[in-house]
Amino acid sequence: MYAFQYERPTTLAAAQALLSAGGNALAGGQTMIAAMKQRLQQPETVVDLGGISSLTGIRKEGNAIVIGAMTRHQDVADNAEVRQHIPALAALANGIGDKQIRAMGTMGGSVANNDPAACYPSAVLSLGATVHTDKRTIAAEDFFQGLYTTALDAGELITAISFPIPQKAAYAKFQQPASRFALVGVFVAQTATGARVAVTGAGNGVFRHAGLEAALNSSFTPEAAAKVAIDDSDLNADLHASAAYRAHLISVQTQRAVKQANG
Image (cartoon, rainbow, N blue to C red; front, side):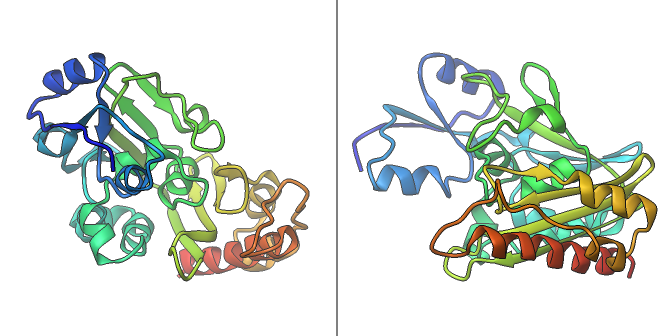
């Protein structure tokens, strides 16, 4: 690891000043620290956001759960409001990585990094969440733009994410055993405007599946999902799974998620 300057501001304004001067934001550090150790990243200044209390916390606002960007995975999993109103999101958080990852990793860091196999992006997209930054608000549909790419501008920070409370929802993940990332993960939600299905781990980033959504709008059942043919032409193929196998997993995990959502 290269030498770098470490800063831990306690206010958002101080963090913004450091980032404007060329610093690199550090959230939970699960990706960034590993990249620095491998010398794939070499920031001159690391700005740790962990000391900014205004970026943490969970609250209910109207028909939405608002979660601060620096809220740890385990805090999301254990929160009473999340468990009551969006239990699928609490379950998702409780299944990320291992105990150490859940104790240190943050929702904002995961969403900003947009790993194509990360779990949170599927919840953000399926639930139609809104990403709040220090400059603006960004709809989930506009936020994720492909492999490790988002709508965030340089130096722009996620401050919170607002999740509309669905009528029902569930997340089913087939994990890669070594990394515990999703080989394929599917988050399904039944909302006032219809069914939404978001898939992670299978492609060049999180995406919604129109065919599955149409089937579930007709009948929100595993049997309806099972009838949908999953095209594998744009899916990932690597040493862990072929594109055809990932297509099969999308179908299976969707059926499992719908069954779970229906109780």
